[in-house]
Image 1 (cartoon, one colour):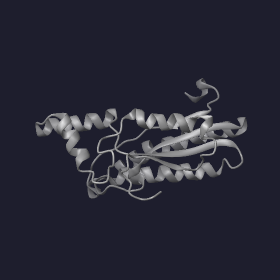
Image 2 (cartoon, helix red, strand yellow):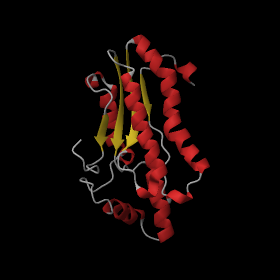
Image 3 (cartoon, rainbow, N blue to C red):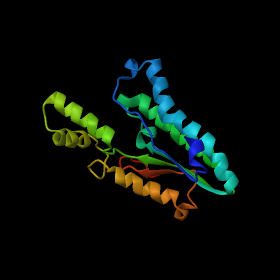
Image 4 (tube, rainbow, N blue to C red):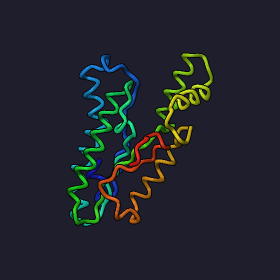
Amino acid sequence: MLGALGPVDILVNNVGLFGLAEFESVDDAEWRRYFEVNVMSGVRLSRQLLGGMLERGWGRVIFVGSESGVNVPADMVHYGVTKAAMIALGNGLAKRTRGTAVTVNTILGGPTYSDGVAAAVEAIAEQQAIPAETMKEAIIGQNRTTLLERFLSPDEIAHLVAYLASPLASATNGAAIRADGGVLTGML
């Protein structure tokens, strides 16, 4: 695929598996699957594309991470650990861009009503025989730290991606930038 694209100046690593599971129930195969998708996909694409960006003198690598990489949920340890690894990957790659116009940043997205989340909410609602909207409100209502008191829309994350991909973000490098709706309670 990469060979057919030609030079790539902007890479957005926006893939992610998620799921609720008790820590003890997640076996090694599932841990590997999460690492392959959530971490190694970004490793492989960055390894293939970052060098060309550095040679051409401009580029953007953006990881769409999660606040769960900072505040790992007890019922999604496997997910949170991979998102923490993604944050570390972005930070390490940014150090390779010193003195260039190439930047590498990570977005710490909050609870976002993506297609995958919507499907999960609908499945849970169906199991409990309640409307999906009621389930959606109940889930976000359990989040005691959200300042928005709602799910983010995918567009809200996309707007931050667009900014980080633009020349306007030339001084933003090596950052983990929050678009979490206030879920993270720390000052930074």
